[in-house]
Image (cartoon, rainbow, N blue to C red; front, side, top):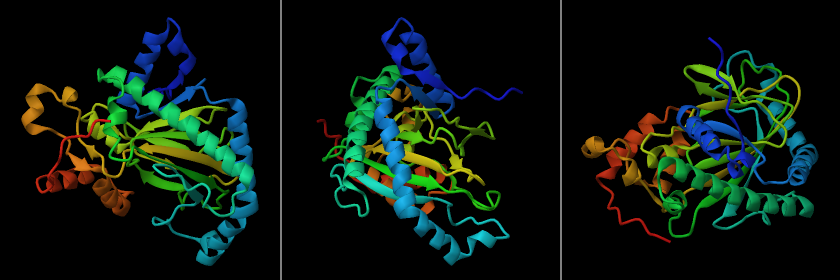
Length: 320
């Protein structure tokens, strides 16, 4: 059986007569892949190149030595058996919304801080554009998903900057173990030379192709809940490589911590109304659970939220 082709969407076509066909591609990607890659997304190539250059420079200058020390201290060079409680990655986190912490993260030079701030603004705008395209495909009013994520202080938005250095035993240590993303919509700017990201489709691991200046988009658990399972978050992982250092900058546009998440009433089929499949919960409660069981199947998380549901008094969703 031929491997299905990973969905790549040219966003420029949304402004042409090819819009309906492009929207159909996005819909198919959301329903059947949980992932797609976008080109001509409106973020300048120049900015992307600067982000990549500075991120790689920062790794060399600040992170590489620390990573080597961690590997030595844990004796990872010499492992003989599979390691299932550790990832072969070097990371740091930036928070953008509701409050940015970019000024407080140590070891970043000013130019890099400024670049990452600019990048975050562009990604935030892109995430909201994408959410509206999903609304259109789902038949929800424009702005519905953004509102659903809002909470009392707006959405949570942050970036995980990762490097996956060359790994001597990729068959024993994953770059990042398999998981689904807990949040809303995830935008990833990844290395265009060193691959490693894979998603699980129909029981097979499929490579997410590295492409220059593309952004990879994937669906998080919260969108699965809001769409009542129409769109699904998908297991994915990173395979460490024996050569090459893979850069990955993943930005998570998530609900606010106190946002109440539940299936959009318009997406619940009448006959399942009595047996509404997905639970209603406060995002922060979901995150507390997720942190403990990130590398396990997502279904028990939804079940646990359902069990809690009866004990939670839910107010109406606040409209902005």
